[in-house]
Amino acid sequence: FDFYLKNAKKVNNWDLVDLSSDKIVGGYLIDKPKTVLYKLAKSSNLWERRIAMISSYNFIKNNDFEDALGIAEILVEDKNDLIQKAVGWMLREVGNRNLKAEEKFLKIHYKIMGRTALRYAIEKFPESTRQKYLAGRV
Image 1 (cartoon, rainbow, N blue to C red):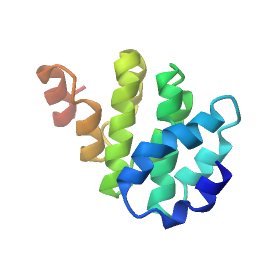
Image 2: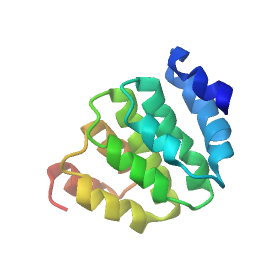
Image 3: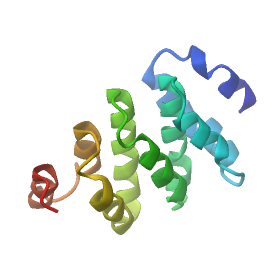
């Protein structure tokens, strides 16, 4: 965990983060305070922000959505496409386990969030529901 975070600024592609952060960072923090993730989510470093979001996948898999949604709220307007994809992916994973939790988040944020994140988040919704979100009529 310490080594991973110490070297996070040296990451040079999304695949490294996606294959490791939920296991290393999320796994380590599963029963610990998550404050470091909120700090990473506010970082100017793209990879640290992505680590924050993808690490929450470990919690999501354990039906704990609070921190995933909290980090998504910080990153919901991030302009970087790699962050948008991560936010949308994790929101979709929340919805796979608790659709009401995902929809509650989306109803608050869908009009301001990036289109990429929104499209990823609603990917598995029925077509009519997806179209309502995309048209801003939810």
